Length: 162
Image (cartoon, rainbow, N blue to C red; front, side, top):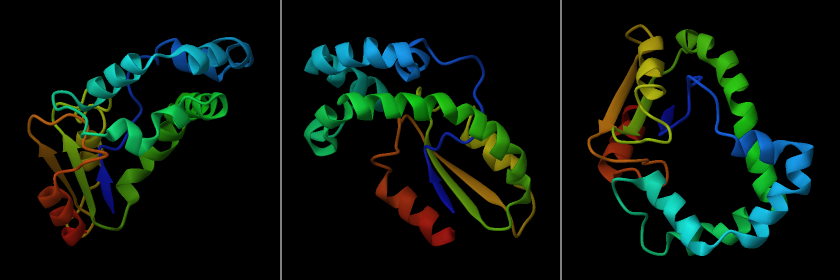
């Protein structure tokens, strides 16, 4: 199994107010329509820059992933609901990692601020014991999120080992 910049552990603290509010019934009627209607493109680009920092998003990335589609009311609210529910799922899954009976490769940017490797990938790799069930973490030094563009060599090597 290969995990690339994966949210794999429950994180400390809480989500900011956007996700719970956007996932709520009141947020669905107020906040989500306002964001869908009025979020400027510069704000979308700023968020993407923060995700990829310290690198920049690939040229044409906004058009490629369809940022306008992700701002539609239903898509935006569904994303908020999924992120809101993620921690509970990770709390249920994390204790089971020690029982995985397959090789696990983790590729993560060392500078990822959205899904920090010291909170997610490093503890996940440490939780998978044994020689036949070992996990290997490959941190890409100085890279932000590599979920959408993992270094080709690191991703290929991880897939070959898994």
